[in-house]
Image 1: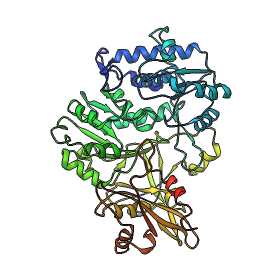
Image 2: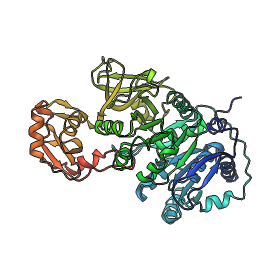
Image 3: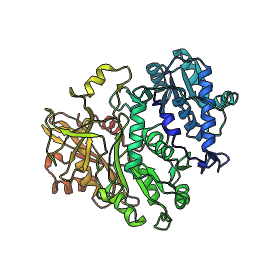
Length: 512
């Protein structure tokens, strides 16, 4: 019988020369360090054997909250290899959050850093987690100490395609975080589609500058390189100067919009620096048109923007091959091969091109549901099995999808719908504006009042009253913010997404 373990799929695509460099570190202790494909194979075998020696129940959860390191990626491969379930946790999470995740997922193993061991182990042992190991960014820790005594060969656990491979907890901006359950099939099918659609080829080299507790860095970037047998240039921390220095050695780069903005601030970014690059990919947050066009002018490359989420991995992408169409700024391209996407109104009716509605999807990449939340799972799927993403968007006559915002961000003021992204677009086009966030807060007369929070460009000053006046000449009055706040920066999570929930809370009493 065919073993659908994702590790097996990835391992089959390692190059024939296992002594070739798989990962080269570009920063951190001892850099540069070189890890061969044989190193990845043997080290993951040792950790997989360690996990097996613990006599864990089948498909045990292994929770991991460590700094980014090659060893942390090897740990991920080892968990898959041993047939357990990988549970990555954001390094920014604090004690109350960790207590929730441990209580909800009930991991048999928790891997943390030495500096957090005392408080993490106290929570973990109290909740019944049997084993707590440490793993530090300098290749030390009890996990590696114990694994060093294990054999460096291991037969991967047999897995059916629909068995659980990972649980990713969503950001929890609307209540408690939910654990999205992703199967070996979900992850493998999406990686294989992206390998073809993004035209991964022999000789590609990826600059890996993303965290690995999230879909983008752990699955999209890492799986892409591993499945193609491509070398990764590994940055433990994002540093635009370090990325710029390594661009001539690379062909593929993936980043969130903030990373591109920071690279554009570097004087050395030009066409010569990007002479060997094949593909720049952006996701996890909206890419401003200004960034899109500035990048084109400076580098001669057009950023490929795509769209996905924890529950589905990647859903849509702008074309990689020009034969499939142009890359259009402000859009997230077309549904990927095998992905069904429809846009519906609140009554469940399909909407024609150009109309805004809720985005629903299905395909082999779509998760089975939320961990131990059957009611929530049922609520998020339609009767005919489509997942309601919670995103609001439209598809134009050519088939390009544009994300307008999150349904929870929709503002209903005086009975009228206001889509924040539309208003933000007008504000962001104004001289001196770097970016903006439009939110709705309680209003005694209108239900919700529209509020804008605006960041000026460096060295520029903005007048909120003037912004309101200009908007009144461009959009319907009900869409115009009742108040505009000018601030130095917007609150963001670790993936660069603006945390509108924090802004709503901050301004909740504005119209009280």
